[in-house]
Length: 242
Image 1 (cartoon, helix red, strand yellow):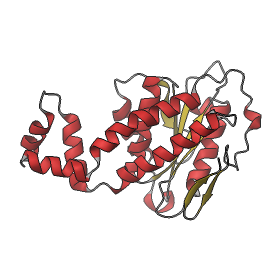
Image 2 (cartoon, one colour; image 1 turned 45 degrees about the horizontal axis):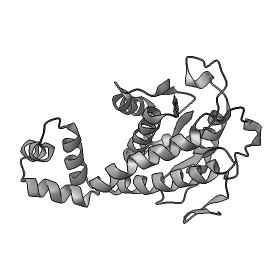
Image 3 (tube, rainbow, N blue to C red; image 1 turned 180 degrees about the vertical axis):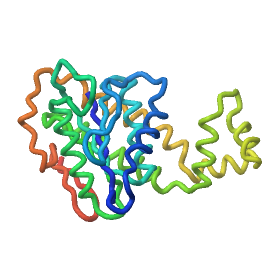
């Protein structure tokens, strides 16, 4: 299972942004398979949902997480592993290793240094899944940095392109934006859209591999305060001891 937990940053000054975030996530998941427990407020200024550790759920997890990073107001944690069954109807009532790890991941994301992507992934400790989890986190940090630093003009081009359904999306995007195709192409290159689109499926495959059916995994082997495979948080970023 893939559990995504997001905690609002600076809620004292910003007010309650959970309703807006739930609307954002709902728009992303609408009509797509992979949701096991829908996203909802858990407690205070936190939201959470559970996704299947399959192709659909993992791809959706990557998109949801990067949407929250783009929004800019959230510390995001991804927990991978087993869940207790039978599942309840609401995420806030669920339990199991993946939920414990999602909480540990959020706490770790909060400790990321200023200017770093506030995102962390915690999965099973045993190899090779621990290494796969570290790789997923590293790639999501890179994608998150691309998303967080993309300009308004870049996002306008990307969002317009993604919305197109015809045979020539870049030409249609140019028409919708009232600019030339060359201008759209330049914006997309500056936004690193091709690299973003190519890397998201890899990030999803890594999450799927680390979060796939773990059998009779024991959540008690997790220490929420430590990285599962020697990764460390500091003021400058993350390091992974392999």
